[in-house]
Image 1 (cartoon, chains in turn blue, brown):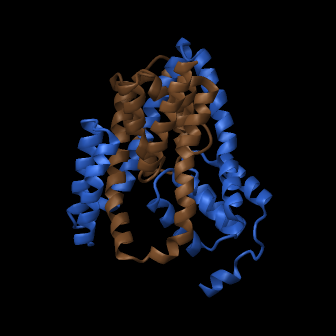
Image 2 (tube, one colour):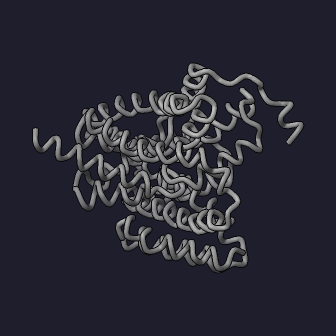
Image 3 (cartoon, one colour):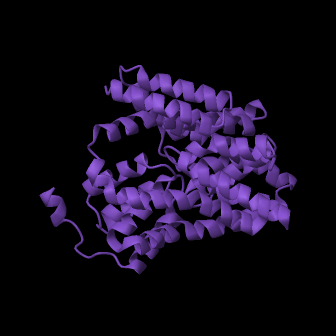
Length: 188
Length: 177
């Protein structure tokens, strides 16, 4: 910890630092933005030590909603209060929202074009594969332990939400307390 | 006009609740977005949903901005802004308050049990996203092969996904998909 602190940038980021840094993260974030946020905050600006980042990251995973939004809010509000949190979030999502609006308008106008349909047919098949890979990567630590708890919950959620298309709210109201109770009773 | 405001309220409520249910991040929310947009509200076809998901993945920025595209296609600019705000707002408020009190309970046994219990749920949800998106996008065996090949490459290599998307788009363009 001590050598970590020595490495840290002593300057607290200003609001415009926050805005432009998260803006830059948002524009580099292809395929997941959080690794870029880590690179910016820990390696480039040294506003957080690696240990502090890991701590904040586990909080972001604990919270519902998009992880990177949670991270921007938590980091921004820690250094500059609620305004800092909002400024970081706006920097992070502002430019991509504008991009999405343009792409959405283009899709609405040209989405029916035969050539575009063919291209998107290929890209959407590929994009689905990317999510499959993320699911497999995330499943590995769960299935890698001797415990039956994790694999059982994964299988039940997959059947309920993926196969039988149960509304997410009902699936979570029933399954989340059960899964948490199992984790409480059998921590290992 | 009345229809417009009804649909904006539907978007706000739906995505506002969804932002609190998205355990493990934006990709966990895809099954519910698909259920609402395609099966329940009939805002779009399976194919359009798959297209919008692909666009959100290929564009820079967080992937959950699929909500912006869904909102736009349902109710134009206002729909896009309402859907995006609904998806970010509640989670930001919670992040702000929990972030300030985290130190008090981060080592508590109940906190650790909640997190340990939610991990396999988010894995199940993201696996569901993979299944739903594959079903929406894969209408023939070549599309299925593209899904499988992308999954294998993304899993085994650190190749930029955009290169895979470009290759898949090229295969589609020459009429193979």
